[in-house]
Length: 166
Image 1 (cartoon, rainbow, N blue to C red):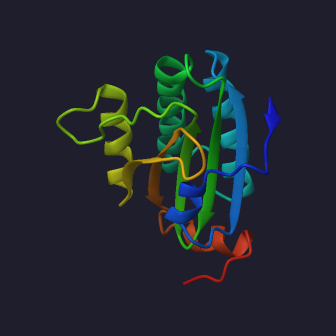
Image 2 (cartoon, rainbow, N blue to C red):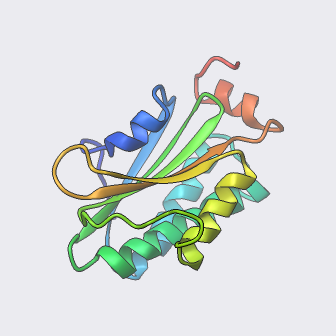
Image 3 (spheres, rainbow, N blue to C red):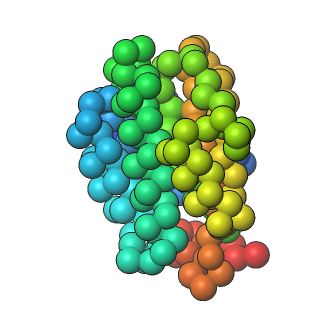
């Protein structure tokens, strides 16, 4: 898997205008992408001082799994790769999965499938949201799940990655 740092999904950055840290992994949209994205996300969480054995990390890893699996399942015919972004700053963590498929999934509660319903529920459990936006450059979309980092390790996380604690 190659790391891709130049083409960062703009919507992931706009969701958190001043992320302290951002990690982007470009994965080919094949079944193994889920495993690679989870492994890279776990490494990012460790770097951000988020305990990987915490319930919060488990929720983030499940969200990454669901979003990448959806990209493999629904976008691989139009997008050879997806960018998985993990951004943290301001007490928030944002997961973004961007692909080149312009079809936007409906993320309203009554119409989502089980995977997106699970993602929305996990984000909501941490005062977060699920949204989808068209790509700002070219075709495609980014699916975003935002979370509030729990207070029990949030301030430590912000100091660790160089952000002034609120």
